Length: 146
Image (cartoon, rainbow, N blue to C red; front, side, top):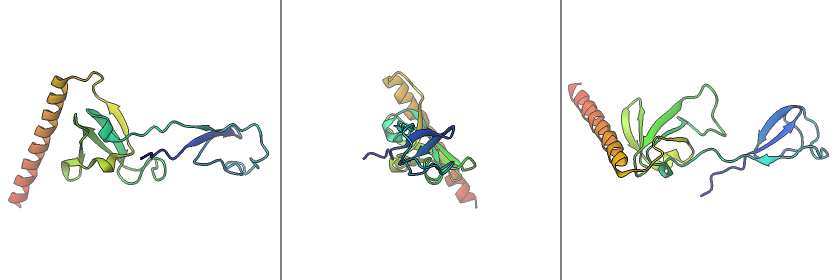
């Protein structure tokens, strides 16, 4: 599935304008763009990834919505890491959890290890599983206390 919405950029009235399709008039100054031959729109490479395709990575997405259509500067971000199989481990108000990959189809990813090695991946997965199990024990113990 191609999630690239086809983001387009063009320059007009000394501004970089980002759109999903070239409008008939400039969103900044309302000038007619259909007769302006100086505008050369170009496609922007889609910067977002599927977290499951980036093992052993740090991943970031908006807590609600997505970056292109609903994100604003004051919106919360959700952070996670992927194990060597691309499963996502994230932390929220309920603690550490393993999440479905489908919720992370449009995120930013930063690879934590540039060289793939079985030793690193085994250690990475073990550390994530240990943290997940520890969090589960703490939550279970706290639930029994109340």
